[in-house]
Image (cartoon, rainbow, N blue to C red; front, side, top):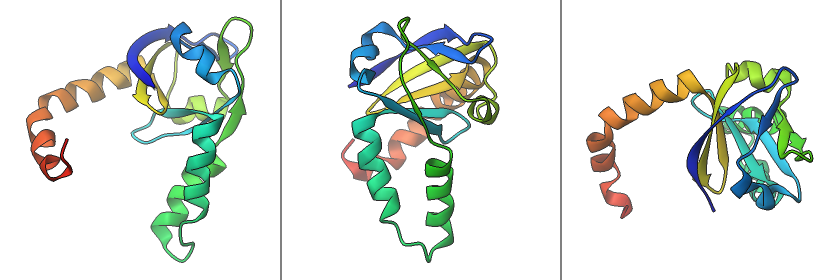
Length: 143
């Protein structure tokens, strides 16, 4: 399980250090792709296979499902950890997420999200202010 929030710097070659506590889970390979809210999603190879199977089974006759599958699948890239526990994030994904130097790696149970530090802070502040409304909207989900 991935949980927690960690700040790391992206180097000039597009490499990002993955928090040490997550590295073992990613040692068999990982996939990074466009996420939602202008961040990147990083999945273990196993979790990615589950998600990709679900996406591939969506009806292609619906525009929204085609668009979502394209966002996730066409933007995906296999990545692996180097000896220092870093992954190389492709330039097109760094551009999509507006990643500069300061980045945040956030654990969200079955995936990691990679955010530009300023974007993460802005998103987090907005969400924290709306937390009561969000919790109320989730009432019927037994959360």
